[in-house]
Image (cartoon, rainbow, N blue to C red; front, side, top):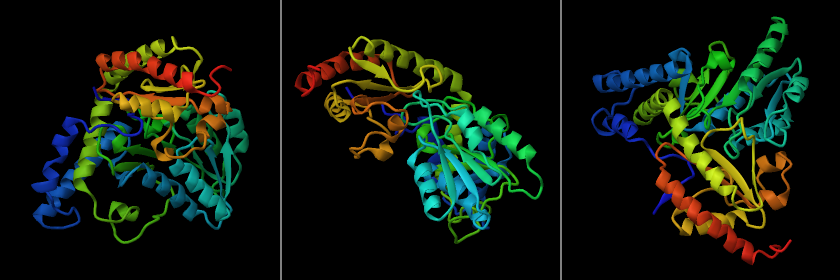
Length: 393
């Protein structure tokens, strides 16, 4: 049996999505920048896709920009704003548990002389709103906080952060620097409505591969009036913000994936939550385990669990030998022997963080798979604890 419980890393492509995108590889292959009928057919499909995405976000289609992935979307949001304020001594705020595509981008800004603050989280992985509020200055131009964490599934109080930004914006005078709010919703979109006006965000990232669409495609919502510069050059595409020939097939697929996720959200939440709850109930029968993250404010498909005296990488490899795919953290940091930066920021002790396992389900998982997993996992943990050097402690 082959079981895939690593949907936070990437998801299989939904058959509906495949069906929508296939014609744009062979039959409708035109370049949307061309003015002949082939190009116009492709351009029409692109704009229809933009409109579909706009409906899921509750925004205007002209505020939707296509990119190659969440990493690029996040980079454009952050670096594009920084470019606008490079001579203004601008200040930025993010959290300590962001995805590397956000954290490392802000580290680069620090090297270039920008002021960046990294707000702390509590032991459940939740942003400390009071601390965030204290960090806001008159020259703060961007707050970037992910909607839901990719490792532990904790959902952040995004609307409350949006309200903070709105409150700060209303205080500022016309001559002052503007302030914007960006959220990386790559993990959240499947399970949480992302209506941008309700959330109060000015920039929002969604990734195709996290929502049962293909890899290599994403979108960035940019609220009208937001000051942002391109970070790559060479064409007029996407309003000049993201130049380069647009991959029509992938963007048609992204729109279809977002449409399905938005349409079936409640049904999918009920399914994955039921399966995830069953797994957690089974895991709790194993001794010396703990759930990482907030028990209430979390994605319904995410379990990050630590097993004392059982090393995470070893659990992963032994489960893989039994046909079960899970993760020990985010896919972007796999291969590193360092403790997860997310678990470290939550002050989880190394003896627990090194035994962490991330189990993330999707809409194609089944009860049969859950039953098999709960049969195999306790045996794996028992074997590893028997050979662990500190198993007697």
